[in-house]
Structure formats: C-alpha cells, structure tokens
Image (cartoon, rainbow, N blue to C red):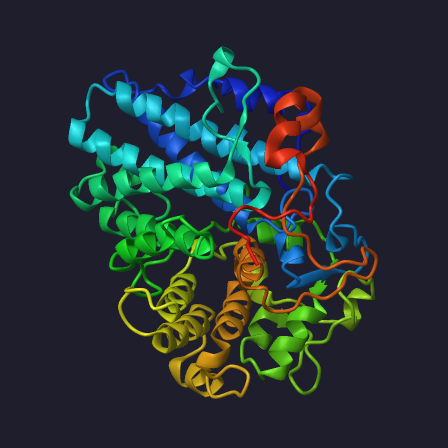
Length: 477
C-alpha cells in the first residue's frame, strides 16, 4: 500500500511554493541535461493522476463508496461519508497539488528551457501538459468547487493563495483546452516525450481526442448552467472525441510493485477483506439482468444475482455478500482516465438537448451501453439483448433517467465519474446510509489543515459555506 503522509503544514507550502524537488539526480545526459527530468516529471504526473483516480484506498479516494457502487463490511466510516478522521479531503489536495500539478509545472519549466527541441516540439509538449493540468484542476473543482488556481504554486511570491471561483476556473480551463487542441491538431511530433507517454505513446492524434473528450465532459457538466457556453463547447468538441474503445485514455499497470494498479494494492497486497457490493448498484443490476454482474462482482447467488447487506453503509460478514470481481484484483488491470463509453453518454445527453453533436440521442446511448459491455469483455450480441430490457431500452420520455442510470453503472471503474454522474442527473436514487442517515453528499468540504494554514482564504471560499451538502457550481436542480 502506498504510504500516506501527514502534511498539515507541508501541504500548504507545497500549494503555495510549488516545493521544488531535487532533480539533479536525473541529469545523466551531459549533452541534453534537461531532457530526462522533463520526461520523468511528465510520466510521474501521469501516474500520480491515474493512481489517485484508480485507488480505492479509504485514506485517499472514497468515490467507489460515495457513488454507492461499493460499501464496507467492517470499517464503515467512509461508506457513511466520514472525511475528517482520515483527513481524506486533505489527501486529495496533497495528491493533486503537491504531486500532479507541481510536476506539471516543473516539467513545463524544463520544456521551455530545452536547448535541443524545436519550438514546434516544445509547443506540442506544453499542450500535452496543459491537458493533464486541465484534468487535474477540473477534478478539484468537481470535488470541492472553489479551489486555489490563479495564485496556486506561485512560490514565495504568495504563501496564502486565494480560492478562485469555480465557474471562473472552468472557463479558464476551457480556454486552455482550446489552445491545446489547436496546437495538437496541427502537430505530429511530441519529440522525446513520446517515450515517456504512458497513455498514448506519443500519438498526437489521440491526445487531441482526449482534449476534445475532456472538453465535452466539462461542457456537459455545465449543461444546466445559464450563460456557461456549454452548448458551444460541446458542439465544437464533438467531432474530435473518442470514436471507439481503442481511443480511450488509460495506462497499463505492471505486474510487480511499485507499478501495480492501486486496486491490487488495496484488494490483494493489503490483505483487506472489507469492500462489498452496495445494495444501490446491486438492486439496479439485478433488476435489469445486467450481464456485467459476474464481471463487476464475485460470490453471486445461485441465480447469478449480486447479494448485498441490504442498506448502504451497513456492516456485514464479508463472506456472505458479493465482493469486487476477480478482474479488479489483477495487478496489471488498466487505470482509466476517460473512457469511450463516457463520451457516448455525454453525446447522448447533448443530442437529447437538441444540440448539434452529430447523430441522435438513442444511438449515442446504445453506443455507450455497448462500449461498456465490450470494455468489460462482453460482446455486441450480449449488449444488444441487454438493451431490450424494459428498464434499459431507450425511452425518450425518460431520457435523463436512462442516460444517468446507465452511465452511472458503466462508470464502475471510474468512481469519481460515477459520483459526478449522479450529481449531474440525480439518477439513480441514492440509498440512505445506515449510520449517516443521509444520501451521498455532493462535495468534499475543506480539511482542517486548510483552515489552519490559510484560514482567511479558505473561509471565504464557496461564499463562506463549507458543507458537504453544498453543491459545486454546475450541480443545479
């Protein structure tokens, strides 16, 4: 299990200062001293981002629990939405700022200083870094709402970074993505980044697809926010998004530590026997005879149904209920950043609103369901039969419920996206947690560390309110 650090003061300094690392150890090539550090930082930022999203570690990422895909059998605090005891909300800030965003910033400096790469190659590399940065900041907004942005990582010039308005951050990120898409669309060479590109191995065309797909995701987040320009964003991105499962963004983990999927670390290496199927997901998949049940979970009953403890957040004997499937315990299981299935559901939503994204809502919806089936090893014939199920078959009068529910099910290996899907559509209905007495919260609040080191600015964030029942700016009724 990767170590979790205590950073009550360190985190603040990392966010404000940028925490310049000792990277002299990477300068092994006297003829090109800046190449190795840039490549290493690019790869490390990618891994740190993917590791965070993939991890089920309750000290790090609770979204498989908060999406009510999983619950816990013994230590049920996180299934009941507890953040403070483990400083989970603080750990998110540390991961994103002190690891991902810091490495992106330092990498950008080395790219700009390179004496060996052409300006065209530098611009391409910077565009790729922009995509990673946009992804990290959009994740922070989706989780917290207002976060440090314009004054983050400024060094000693600002040790008390302000919290920027979340909608303003999203607008800025969209502009950054547009610039990256323009550069990546007109370029064909990532230079020496190609060997360190753990997602696409130097394919500019696929990075362009990822940038457009991320832009579409952000556009659909804001679809109900008046004046957000969401429709224009979605329509401009639609032609350049993923076209099949071959395109989606993921990394392949390795079979030995420390490069295994974090799922393996927590489900196998740690010896933890705690995670179970949540009744919320179990009931929906059982009711629709979902063929992914035997893939998502093991220890099904004699009819092939998922068994659960009956209420989300209620403890129970591990052996008595369905547990995460064997495929999730494979150390090389890929970590998914953004999938083709997700893109299809976003297109279905956009088309259902009458936006010009090509195709119709029903086709995109069916493509999303099918893409998920194929992603998990099923086949098209099975997907076609599943799409005939009464509560799955396309029904334009229930479009939001169909899209929201089936996207939520499909995002089984993308816990954060599953949680955001519920926030976007209010489907499916979340169960009331046994101990918390509430349904899933809509945001993380800020950690006690944030208040201890930057109290004035964090206290002013989100209009002065910091409840987990508050909503991020795009989550409107």
